[in-house]
Length: 282
Ligand code: HEM
Image (cartoon, rainbow, N blue to C red; front, side, top):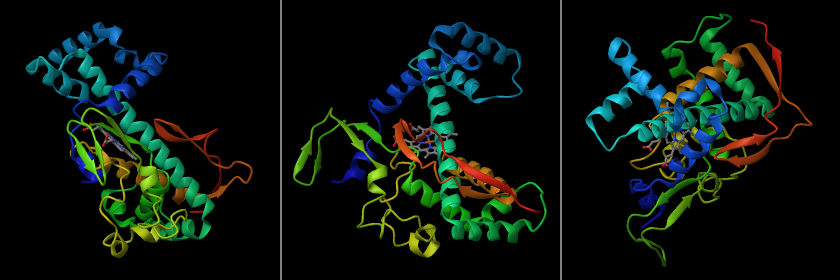
């Protein structure tokens, strides 16, 4: 039995997202634009419900949830709000962190930035045309840089599970009902899986090297049945943002502004990530 067996359990009682949901709702209650997610504002939810009935042409995520709720009494208004909070938190902050840390790593490692830029130059030449799907597929080295960034700075540094059954882990038995925390941040820095684990080296994620990597030594999107459902979309977003910036700007680090990592549900840089951007000549 291993850590992966724990991840294989579905989240019977999901400590993380329920807790995150509460914190997040408390936080967004100060943002008027998203008041609609406040549980006290169920009326607004009802208003949306009615507007959905009158205009069926465009179905958004909230409307899908409402449809589920109509056919499932257990999925109530609170569940809709919880799910929307999950999407807001899971889909936004995580991507922002991954973008920031990737830009930071490229700024600090100039030769790696140069290699990533040359790949983009080979794709776009001097054109400032928008990026299409084929371009994104061709950004192989940039993808390696993003994956290596998410190894050293996983946006979700800790994952939790409440055990629905006893789990034997080596000499120990973890009893059903206990909360277990798994840290991708730590796993990603284990020497037995990563040579010089503190070093930023995108070559670890070349096709050839990836084959040698233990499948569960890399967990930025978790693993098992409750892993991230948005990981492909996330990679597209990150590639799109980073490549757009890198095509237009040369990045360098600000010497007096080191990155100080803090854990605020997602991994963050206290005081932000500071970079210098110098326009490139197209
Ligand atoms: C760099 C970006 C992202 C990272 C690092 C990330 C990572 C994760 C992780 C670690 C989990 C927890 C899984 C677990 O508890 O085992 C998760 C869950 C989830 N993520 Fe992401 N995520 C990212 C982007 C996104 C995006 C863009 C979306 C949606 C558009 C999304 C939607 C979700 C949802 C809905 C869940 C909950 C899945 C479930 O409970 O079954 N994520 N994500």
